Image (tube, rainbow, N blue to C red; front, side):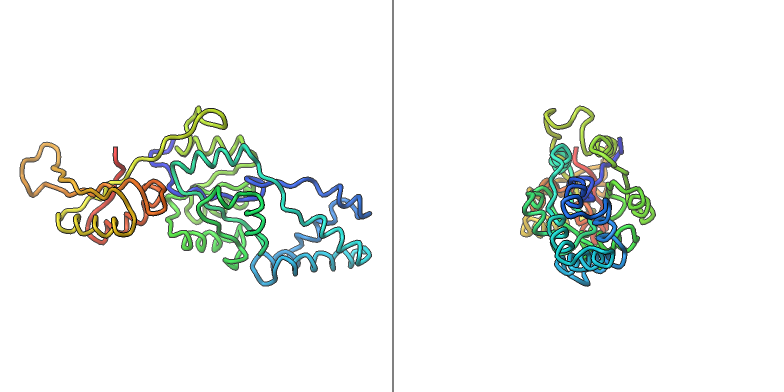
Length: 298
């Protein structure tokens, strides 16, 4: 298990939290060759403009239909097939339960290659309530596995790569994320996701659906050399919604000299209600500006 667990869990959507039924039934019903819908939809010339936000989801559907027509399908058949194919999908309940437990210990965000329909899909599935943030390629303007997708996502989320665990069912995506400095786990199935969360300290080894929930993460101590700055920071954090923001005097063990005293601001809960450790990066920056540092509360 990692000595310091990630403070951000960054997840792929499709293949991890959402799944789709095979396309066979739609293709058979419309007299299309097996595999033709996916081939048309994810052809680079069709998919990329939608995934980087150059066209909306409706424009993507129209482009898919045109490609099917170019392949010999009648226009009305192509349009009908695409409408039937463009479904919302379904959640992977076991994976969602694991994420709920991990969310007690860190922030959780999605990083997905998606079109403008993503928001509506997440709301329909209820997944918008299961994560703290959503980062989509159609807003970033770049897709996984391009390294810039991960850099831009972390800037949006205001998080450092070294404290981020990225999980994806595609190995090429986790390989790219690792190259940018993120902790990564290739999770082709829910069992692999569970193993990754356990290995990185986001889930107890005995945890899992029906096995109880993970304990809430510990608080954060912001350690500063000056009492006035500690009290000033505590006031600022409290005004922004952090709590409890109490200031303590901390003399170094074995030292009697008053100059060897640090001042500690205890922070347990962030403004969004998550454990303070989920926003450790923000507290790190506040500490560094005052020549201090942070550590986990016991």
